[in-house]
Image (tube, rainbow, N blue to C red; front, side, top):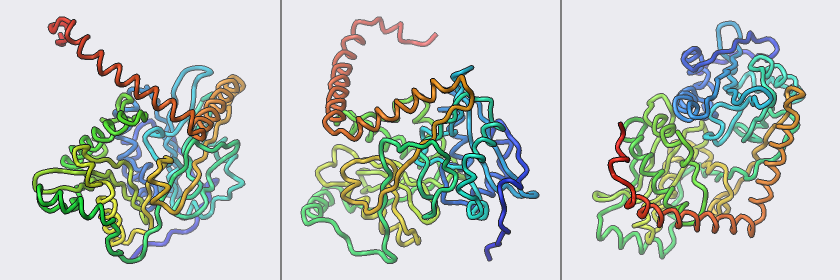
Length: 397
C-alpha cells in the first residue's frame, strides 16, 4: 500500500546545502522514488555528470536540500561556474538533461503557490551563492501533466520545444507501411528474424549506449547537424549513467542473430517513457530500422502501463510527423548582483539569436551545410597531417 504524506510548504522546511551527491544520497534516493517523473534529477544521473562533464567544466556543486522533519521533500541540484562577475548559478547536468526543475515531492508540488516562484529562487540563490547571474535552462512547462510552478520570471522560450506521443491504453496492431514490411522481410531472409531486445542499466547497456552514440554521430555528420556528444566528458557521462543499476535507464535494440540494426536510449519517467537518443546502423538504412524499433518500443511502453512516449527537445521533422503533443521549454536568466547585469543581458541576447536561427530554416540550413563542408575538409586533411607527422611523437611519455 502506498503511504500518503501530509501536505508540506516550502517556507516551513529546514534547509541545508551540500557540495556532493554522496552527502545526501540516502534521502535523495528516497525522494527520487517518490517523484519518478523527474529522472534527470535522479542522484545517479547527477553523480555521473559531475564525475565526467562537471569536472571538465570545473563546476562547484551547490546542492540545496529541504527537509520536513526527517524526510527530504526537495532537492535543487545547482552548481557555480566562473569567477567574480562571471559566476553563474546553473542546473547540475543542465546541458545533458532534457528537462530541468527542482526534484520535489508530489505533496510539496501540490502546495507550492506559483506566485512564490520569485521569492523561492531568491531564497535558493542566496543559499547556493554567491553568484552574479542565475541561469535556469530547459524548464518544462509541465511536470507529470501539471503546471510547473517553480518557473520564475523573467523567462524566455528555448530555441526548440519538446514533443511527445500520447499512448493508447492497449497495444495497437503494427502500423508499418507496405514498403517497410517488404524491406523488413528482405532483411530477415538474409539476417534472420529481427526482434526487440531490452538491456537494463549495467555493462551491456553502457556498451550499447556507446554504439548508439557513434551511429548518431555519423548521422549528424552526414546532415551537417551539431552533435552534443563532441563536448568533453559527454560520452563518458552517458556511459557511466547507463552502467549504474540505480539509474532508471535502458537500451532498446532492434537486432537479429547476426546484427544490431538500431538502438534507443530510454529513460523511465514514471508514466512517460523518454526516448533520450535514437539512432541506427547506416548499413541497414534501407529497411527503416528506426521506424520499426519505434513501433516495438511503443508497444512495450503500452504493455507496461505508460501513457506517454516522450521524444524530448528538438524540432526534427520526424517528431512533427509522429508526435501529437508539444511543450515549451522555458529559461530564466536574471542578475543576482549589479555586476551580473551585463552578463545576464548577453545571455538573453544569445538565446534570442539562437531562437531566431532555429526558427529561420534558410539560415539554419546554411549553417548546417557550412558545418558539413567543414567536417569534410577536416576529414580530408587528417590523413595528410597524420602521414607527415613522426609516429613517435604520437606516443605518450
